[in-house]
Image (cartoon, rainbow, N blue to C red):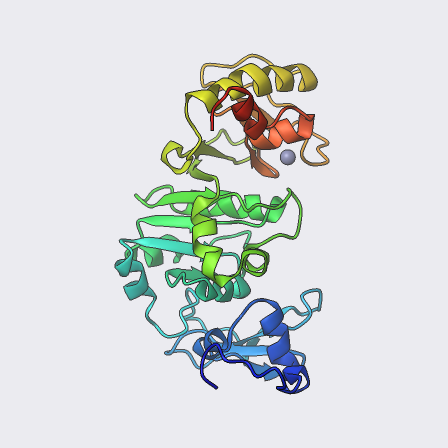
Length: 326
Ligand SMILES: [Zn+2]
């Protein structure tokens, strides 16, 4: 059928689409993407190759709450590295000057691909707790200079940022994290973003998300590991003097009062306090007087916009409008 032509009398094709394909279509994946990743049905899930040189295939259950959720068939090969279905990952990274999107799992790689992001891969343990020893050397071999992450907005996602930052801390590789537009601890991920905004807008939406450089900070052995997430000013279209004024005059004083935040130390951080964004039993959060936000080692960075929303303060948009700016 020619593109764009739909007969009004065409039959309801939903009866003709196999279940395994329908489930992928629900995730916003097109037939071309399904074909690229050579995804086929097997039992109650999908199976797909991971690298042209590896015989083993990977299997994922249709139902994300199923156990097991993923399997190796017949078993995990020793030589497995990053997800690289056609072996062209190095070329895809070179094409964009050394940028790699490290997704949280295979479905996020499929979603990114659908959105036109070709320089993407994942580890097969998803947001793993321990990085494999080959992680940094393999990134270097792939020519990666900058790693982009859009982690799930939960503890596992934050832990992933810490692990990745730590693993590359002795290399020149930079780690940029992006805040997905979902509430903390929600199930929102890149796959949901694809469904929400559509393939045509996925890449620009991702690139427009607030971005932070995650820098792993060596810490004394008795403290828990953390990363400092520094906002990247050039990626903030609105981060100008007026935004700074809103942070300093509206958000920060209200936060300091509401949560009893202590004054800044030499590095511009408060003493730790209980994080208002998760059920925090022990003080996990620090206020940055430099970035005007909360760095929580359990649930990540919360910028002034999130803090304002949490405290019911006038939003940045309304403040800006009130100042006569547009
Ligand atoms: Zn928190």
